[in-house]
Length: 475
Length: 106
Image (cartoon, rainbow over all chains, first blue to last red; front, side, top):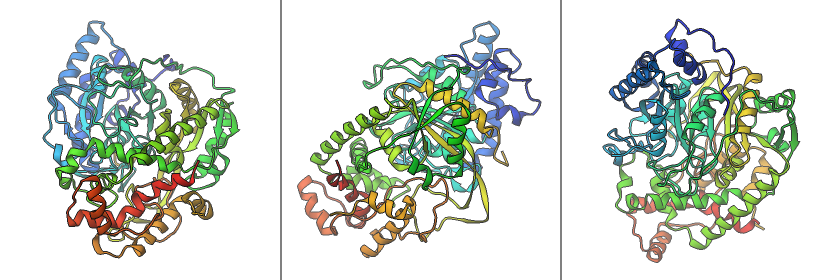
């Protein structure tokens, strides 16, 4: 793992500029004592206090805990004990990561008063790296979409629409410069979608790279924890710290991360699906990204997938989620959830009771065939470039466990708010005239455990796109 | 030959338009009050960045009713109240039935 050596420049005079800096920059300023962790923590705490009500992205502000961690970080750094790039950096946790003595609510009414005794494995690793927890961030209740018991988390770029989910709080808070970075989770799109909507960088690691001990279980065979940041390099810096096995998660395994911020990407073979680039949800930004791939010296390669019913794999997701929350369903605890629409968990958990075991097994067998297909594709290319919300690829790669990196690639105009929920004629989505300008991202998919290659390609694209530093107005 | 969702999408060329149309169709197919899926919006071009959503698939499989779930509940030994049964009956064809598309797949 090699951090970029580029000069990060002087510490800005303006607190807002400091708040929106990347972890790469913040860490250099902290390491060279131009900025103290306590000052940085106070900047983020103030912004969280003042700005989070606009976004409804904070469930618990951890002020005292954060200030104590920041003071400890400053003392260690003063003694010459610098732990690495996350030392003294304030971060926010999706509120499905257990934090000892701090409420961890899953964004869901039945768990509002749940206070765990132990830290999740990821929280422990971040503590050991000297990072400073400033907030428990919102998620759609039980990791679905962006509505929790405090309301809907909103998109800082367009306050009339949700932030998307389920890592809604991490998406909104990171985009609005309220934290240095955040940790989200994904089962079927929960890092990719809010990263897209909020215009940040989301890294969904290979299944098994990051231990999930102490994280809410939605689906044992699908859940992944990953960084949500304001730059590609930041995502890799965070990933390095949170990677690694834990005895509490039997699916977690040792892995290495080969990432060099200065590595050449020339000659990397980037697969793409020609038809997908022409169809919704691809936009001009996606098509321009393919051109940028060429300009960066990488080689686009056309690839194909068999025309299979990939959505059928979701049977596994519904069955696992219903099993994870079986007790809550059977004792009618799900009745307490705010969302009781036909497309929300309570109804889906109940309906999943009627899926058959035979079909589950067949879906699992199909999952293996799909993994073999992706293996074939990755024997031809080094990575894939896809429209971030192409549903086949979101489904496929979540079920095969391949890593993804979503990054801002440009801006598009929208004449209507976007939503994670099925259309509701009683509550039509706001329309905009003139249309509003919002960020749009693309997604790279990598080989299993090759997040380093994803990062190197992503960094090259991020530099070429030149849009990562733009900020939402009002923050 | 069953028309799969993929063929449907290929025919429209726009997955999320498909979703909107599907939801509207679902309402037409289920008129049992509050449990029915909500009607889709106008089938216009979906805005960029609209993600896939649960409950927006094209309705699939045979019609079902509350009675279907009452009887099936005996098999899997669960009992839901009237409200839950209504909701399940009204949404099964867009939530779960499309998952059986695998049977026409590989």
